[in-house]
Length: 276
Image (tube, rainbow, N blue to C red):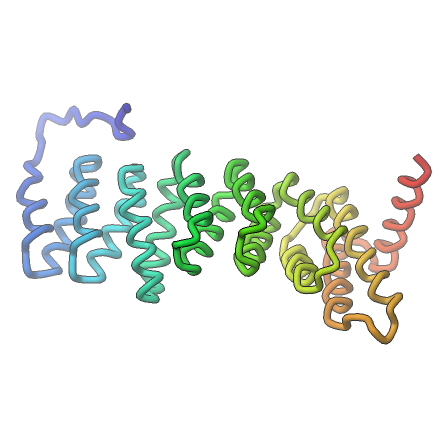
């Protein structure tokens, strides 16, 4: 595979071995920190392996965090698995700083293999919940067609844990991907599960859709839920009704329509569709 870094054709090439030795062996973490920084600036692709080693082995948290940061900035896919392992350990230890940096660096590196690695993590029932949930979150942040495909697969998989499915729904909605949104709306229209409806409605409301066609499509689905709940009178779910009403109001604001005009337009669209 061709290097992602340009060849260094400079006539002066610094010997990196002393920096690597300092990073690996010097007891002073400040000197190790300085060596990591200098390796990043001078070594580029030659810095990747020493930085991976520091990420995996250095006893000082700040060196590990800095190594993760530099690896993300270098963007070399060789660091992907080391960062996955670092992320897993940080989640186990509840280390928010390392968790954030490892996640950020994975997204910076990206690569065609990352979505499939994350999808495999979600499907691994031996993996602990927080790691599978983080994999879902990262897929949502990537948000490309492949990641959306994996999120849809997780939602449709009957073996997916209910809480993980809820998180996958949130991430899928947040991507704004049309195929994913269509699936969510289709599921919303056939489901009578209140918990599911509340998750979807809350997620939809937080997504700043502006496209009128999409908003009216969502609005129609939400209005059906509201109408169904209102028809129950005393048995209606007040929390769900309030969530739906607030979401509808948010969508009407998104396209600068008065709330009543928005609802009226949804009814008009319904009539036109029935007349086809």
